[in-house]
Amino acid sequence: MTRSIPYKYLPNFFATLISFVFLTNINAQSLDKKAMKKLPIYTLEQAMKLPSDEVIRLTLKKSNLTELPQEVYKFKNLRYLDVSSNQLKEIPLELANLPQLQYLDFSDNLLTEVPKEIGKFDSLTVLMLNHNDIVTLPTEIGALKTLTELHLWGTAIVSFPSSIVLLKETLKEIDLRYVPLTRSEHKKLKKILPLTKIGYSLKCNCDF
Image 1 (cartoon, one colour):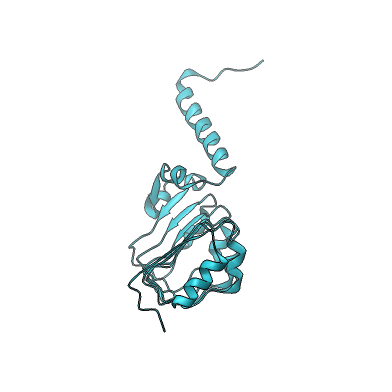
Image 2 (cartoon, helix red, strand yellow):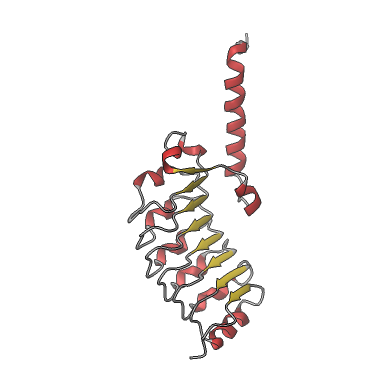
């Protein structure tokens, strides 16, 4: 004999059911920008009060961080992580253990390089590295088959690895404004990425 759920428990039951269905759908597909923006974004303090699988978007922006808190790695459903405007000197390799991570913003930090392990960030679609002292990118950047946007505004990039050509079908945008890339490098990049929108500063003093 099947027992019915008491009326007083129905609101909680349906809330749990809706949450389960929602998270199941989220986990089953990649989210585009519009879908991502509709999801709530939490601070770490707020996120720690929630079930870890409900945290999809997390911001630690302007938190005076010199390293990422270990608590970040417990959110296995994390799709969006903004750690911009801190004092971070490296991209932690542990972030590759967040299998759903699509959007990663390390802008305005103290990075001097991008680790070769970036190639293990299998789900990454948007990578923002604006205003860091990065001179080049590792060969492994070509392994990011889902990457659609690469933001390098105000970095010190002077060249790209030849492996960037592996992204010619998927990479939609590269932001190179205020980057000391030579005009010849711009032309070379445009030739190997003909479908990619490449932003750069017209007043760039880059003929050297």
